[in-house]
Image (cartoon, rainbow, N blue to C red):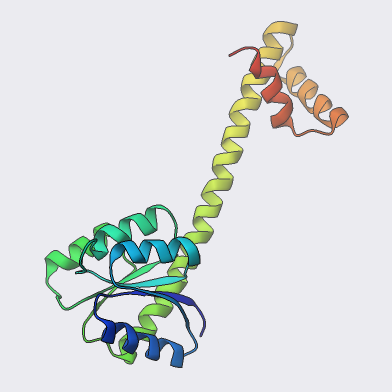
Amino acid sequence: MWGRIVIADDEPMTRMDLTDMLEEKGYEVVGAAANGFEAIEICKREHPHAVLMDIQMPILNGIKATKVILRDKLASGVVFLSAYSDESFTSKAKEAGATGYLVKPVDEKSLIPTIEMCIGKGKEIHYLNKKIDELDEKLSDRKVIEKAKGILMKENQLTEEQAYKMLRDLSMRSKCKMREISDLIVMDND
């Protein structure tokens, strides 16, 4: 097993125990934080696969820190640690985007499978986000190309097919992407 982990808990003994359990199983603990602000800073620097995050911490609690960490994609996933198992805490954890929830005291039997699931889900989410970004870029390219094609059709009395062929030919001759050619055509018409 392998993964880079950040531990955020205001209890030093809990941080030490979790570190020992994780390192014994081959995980790399890349940082330990006593509050949410420290957790965010460590995640900015280390970009871990998972964060073990205590919900109740001073200064900035785990829920707020998790929202920032996941929003800014500073870690692949977060597993909450809490002494409480009531629905209000688990609901807040779900709303924050947690991948898991463990009730203290945490034992190795529950910790390791939860971390593995968190890391696995994090990889899935990373892959899906990458695909979404690629699709967004393709859609953006398509919109600009369509706009450029419309301009060429209007200015040169061309059919849609002729305008597309003109863009493609310009792209090949100039060894530029069609998006780059389209951006230039659209630039003067905005």
